[in-house]
Image (cartoon, rainbow, N blue to C red; front, side, top):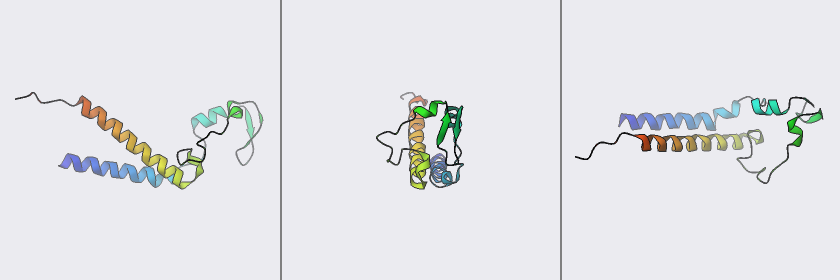
Length: 107
């Protein structure tokens, strides 16, 4: 019972962090975005104005308006993406642990 309470409490804390606190994270580009923009000049709005870099070939996609499209689209998008990420990670991790658990020999 204590183990189950510990797991549920940990999941609850992770969901709160992913859904609420993630909205206060830095809006600076992550490592992949920064590497893709190396070699380009960027204006104050973050738009590429010149130079040569990978990010110049960046294009929109069909799901650009969906809640999962990116973290820069607003608080709802960030919260939904974070919560879904926590739930998927928990489900996959739980499944792996369930499959790898030690089974008691049949009596």
